[in-house]
Length: 415
Ligand SMILES: Cc1cc2nc3c(=O)[nH]c(=O)nc-3n(C[C@H](O)[C@H](O)[C@H](O)COP(=O)(O)OP(=O)(O)OC[C@H]3O[C@@H](n4cnc5c(N)ncnc54)[C@H](O)[C@@H]3O)c2cc1C
Image (cartoon, rainbow, N blue to C red; front, top):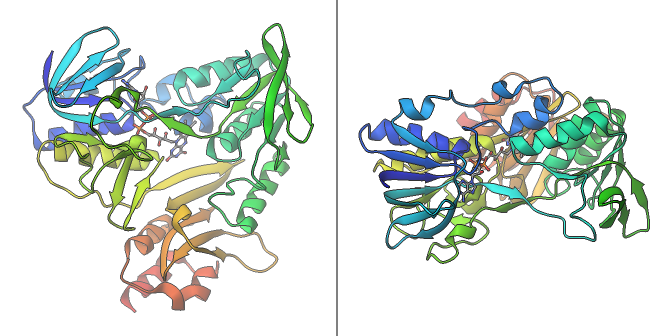
């Protein structure tokens, strides 16, 4: 098969690339290859309603079934790219079929990192990335009596909340001292952990899982390094992701933490682009290489990469956000919290924090807003985008939760 544009990965990034290509080029053939049987769907909704039966399967899809056809794209579902030859501009599918292309986008995202401990291949241990993974968890939750979740970051926390919301007793085991420890200051992380506990999740910080125990191949307990044993019949693991780049191993494309791209989302191989979770891109706003695991980032990167594949030459320049929730308390993680050198906590002594700002050299580079009001998310994005203002002298005002963030940011911009 021969195509003008080839997109590998039919998730949010790959699918949004079709929109980008078609904005610039209405003629050339597009082919999109996806390993799963589905068109692009929302992974965020898996933990924010699908497992809890608040959403049906059909509510998850991000595009109509005929989106690909309507945009003149051939969608090859249930097909995995297993090999690539970027010099010859061709890829091989698991069926053995070959596709030749002119421009290529890699949008293959990631899969859950496996916990490599004793008996971790037993039945009853679940990972969560895909719709099929969540179907497995949903089915298991119907008969389970005790859920044990491992991991104190996004997937672990959200899965613990989802399983609690379906009525299961849940224990959360994590290496961290408090949830989201790698992103949040202690006061904010501990406050959110309290909310998790108030919602009925039992939390066990600073516990390292060393293995599972079970009967007849089914896990019935896990053991931690400190000697504790946690009995359960549904084990959910959320300990990070591994990027899907294996099919590129014989190629010259540069892979560091992710597939390296410039600010146009093009890799070191001309005509080969990467977008979404798999791309480690030059962030022109923060001036650093970044790997971002947000759906908003995936969609906008896919769209920009698509336009650039068709010759638009646009820099990817966008502050993106990840929204999460702890038992109905909405949280928005904006920008690059991990890039801050210090945190300014938004809140008053003795009162619950309302978020925090990650600050580096007089600039806000990221932040979390707890129960954001009005246009505060937009305001925080603008603050991060605005690299020319030294915000050091606004520290006290930013920490004051009584001040509306949008009004404050508008004032900062003209001062
Ligand atoms: C449970 C869960 C909840 C989340 N919640 C949020 C949230 O609240 N907010 C937020 O911003 N983000 C959230 N995320 C993260 C967000 O979903 C990802 O950042 C986003 O899906 C990334 O999109 P992508 O297209 O880059 O990758 P993916 O969504 O991983 O899509 C990549 C696609 O490529 C396919 N693929 C992989 N390898 C191959 C191959 N060799 N050949 C063919 N196809 C291949 C995969 O099957 C997959 O369909 C969540 C993720 C999960 C798992």
